[in-house]
Image (cartoon, rainbow, N blue to C red; front, top):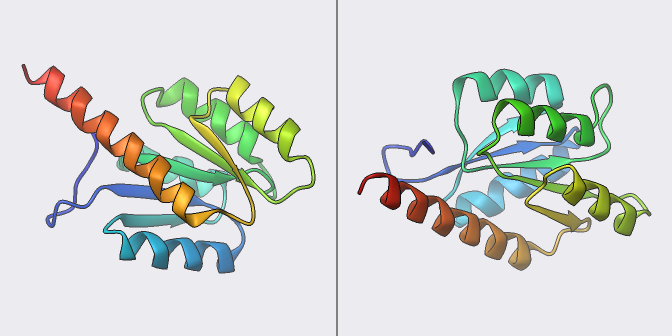
Length: 138
C-alpha cells in the first residue's frame, strides 16, 4: 500500500547522483503536493525501499556503482508493484527508453525533463494506485 503523509501527500523516491536535479525535482514535486525522498544512488534507494513504499521511483540511469538499469531490475524483483520512471540525459535516449521499458519501467523521460509531462505521468500513476486500492477494499 502506498504510504501517505499526515496531510495526504503521496511519496516519490528520487534517485539521482546530481544534486541540482534532485533539488529541482524536490521543489517541483513539493509545489505539486508530493512528498519526496532523495537517494544519491541505488544502494541508498534500496535501503529506503526496505522501510518506505513510495507511489513511484524516479531514477536516473547514469549513476556510479549500481546504475539505473540494475536498480530497476532489483526493484521489479523485490517490489514489483512499485512503478519506476527512468530518466537520462545521455545521447542514447531511444536505446535507453527501449531498454527501460523492456526491463519493466512504467515510463522513460529524457533529460532535460519535460516537467509538465512528468507531472502528468505521476498523476496517472496516482489515479491508478487509488483505483487499485479502492478495488482491494471492496
